[in-house]
Image (cartoon, rainbow, N blue to C red; front, side, top):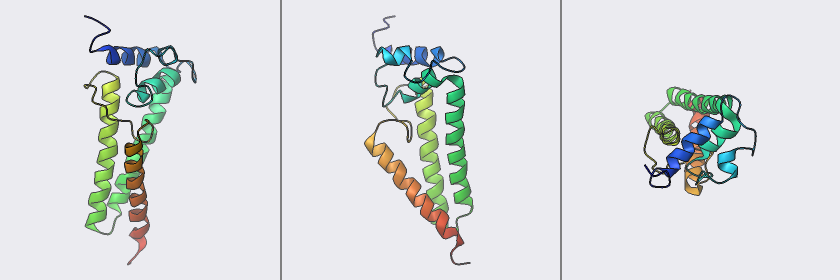
Length: 149
């Protein structure tokens, strides 16, 4: 197998994730990212950079923040007064959830590399704008749950 062939990205990503161990190497002290072995570290493989520099503890913290966000969105969906608000909230929660699952799965080698950015963390203008637009509409849905009582 040629490590410089088609699987180069995922090999370097696995090395970066595994070298972070429990507490990581420290901010901007990762070898895979600092020496530019890991390509596309600001877009598709931002999770690998975080796992290398902050370790397992940082990954658990990041995933718990995403889990809190998703549960908060589901709470907004449950407390919405109209059906459209509920369906829209579940749609935004599923977009964030599946982008998270696909990006993390791709960086640790469980899924193929497809180019899905990590929501609100990876560099990607249209992804950030779309996610922020969805969160803004969610804030509006959350605010309007107290109206018409």
